[in-house]
Amino acid sequence: MNALLERYPDEVKAILARYPQEQKRSAVMPLLYLAQRERGVITVKDMAEIGELTGMEITEVGSIVGFYTLYHDSGPRFRVQVCTDLPCALRGADEFLKRLCENIGVRVGEPTADGSLVIEEVTCLAGCHHAPMFQVQGDGEITYHEDQTVESATETIAELRRRAAGGQHE
Amino acid sequence: MSEYVLLRHRQIPNLNRLEVYQANGGFGAFRKVLTEMQPADVLNEVKTSGLRGRGGAGFPTGMKWSFLPNTLWPHYVVANGDESEPGTFKDREILENNPFQFLEGLMIASYAVQANLSFVYLRGEFWQIGKQLERCIATLERAGLLGENILGTGYSLRLVVHMGAGAYICGEETALLESIEGKLGQPRLRPPFPAVAGLYNRPTVINNVETLTNLPPILANGAGWYRSLGTEKSPGVKIFSLSGCVRRPGNYELPLGSTFRHLIEELGGGALEGRRLKAIMPAGASSSLLRVDDRVLDTPMDYESVAALGSQLGSASVIVLDDSVDLKWLLNKTVHFFKHESCGKCTPCREGTYWMSHLTERLVLPGKAQAGDAELLLAVARQMQGKCLCALGEFSTMAVTTAMQLFPEEFAER
Image 1 (cartoon, rainbow over the protein chains, first blue to last red):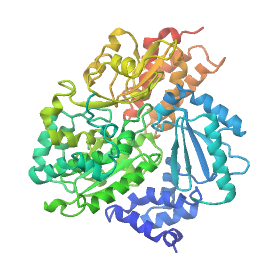
Image 2: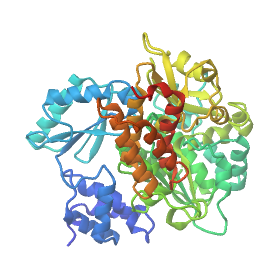
Image 3: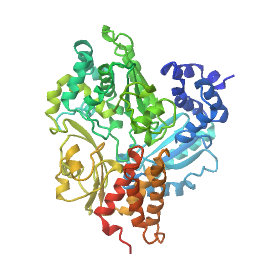
């Protein structure tokens, strides 16, 4: 019984149909995104099921999860990922991140006490001309937030935490 | 610039809607190519235009296509939209605002090499762009411009968007192919080159998003028109991503051969209040540094002229540094990036970026530097050069060696 296939029959079929029939393994990345959609993490069970669908060993699926930074096997529902790479840093991203974390009362990489989100430092997001900027990953989406201030980012984070507390998914 | 070639959405509102794009000449080139031209004619036109790859290497696009053998089938075309070089944000603007011109370019390239299935590889962070492109592709299918027997010509084409998931290395073309095949994004040993053994071990063309977006205007207006822009060896227009210590960062579409001074001072507004320009990184974090002086500022930004200065044009992501920037801090930033993004496959890059990042960290942390750290950093960088499997390792050393060579005073021990 493949729970992923049962839960998302149409999506799984559509993903497999994108690639040549004998190249099922190509579907592993979109299937991982699908598995991660609801809770923001990929479980060992998900990996086994994806392995079944793509003809891969579970360890091979696990290595894909480990290699690519947008897949997670643990962690909170939302990830606020601030770019501190060179062009953003030249426009104050390091200071922005520091003050944002102080404001929220967390350290980089440590989830908030309610377990709803984590603030992370990431490499270039192609938003160098709109620094400081960050992306939010969660609920199967990635959205950009550019030309930010500590105040606007704090507001976005408060909104994400309200959503997490209310339990509602978009 | 009077009329944009690539960033046409800046002059035409709602260009991301098919009817608006078509009302402004969109898909005219694709129709012409399909109904009036043989694949070989398209290839010749692109060769004659002198278009060079906009992803960084500047390799002639037509020549790249011509390497595909006609004895091995199927052929694939892959659009490289993994834009991840620090300082580069040009493909993103095209994909967000002028997606149909990009797709038309991909469709023309696919016809030219007779591919029936082509891929768009996007970095995972471009999630919203991916959703928009899938809507655009569905629109084109409904309009009969994609699918079976397009415009009754017998030619069929299907496009698939494949999302990456956060790995800079997947911008390297063979790592990108591995990623589509559902493997770790690690570069392949070459030869064989993708033109012969690419995606699924079949002949494959991989072109950057901006490169492909140049194709519709080239096919619509002719190679001669395209060559009237830019320089003789670097024809056409280029999007320059300007970032860092400058008043007006952003994308600027200019003919190749425009000067650094024009971009940075006239368009970008020059240095911030009370600051002086110190150095330029013309190709993002992968660049060799240029020390700013009049000769550098008056250099035309084309592939040859920037190379003659000892740097690279690359994807033309111009990061400007002013006199407030500590170069040890800068190297710590760039080296940290490459250490994070090294795929770990080859030892010189995996170990070299790790050790360089340790050393640059010691150089910037107060009281941590040890005697000889700067020399050791340079030695590690030099030992990596020429020994890495792909360009990432090499790129990680460029800023290190050139910063230390051009600004020795900043690395002298106190």
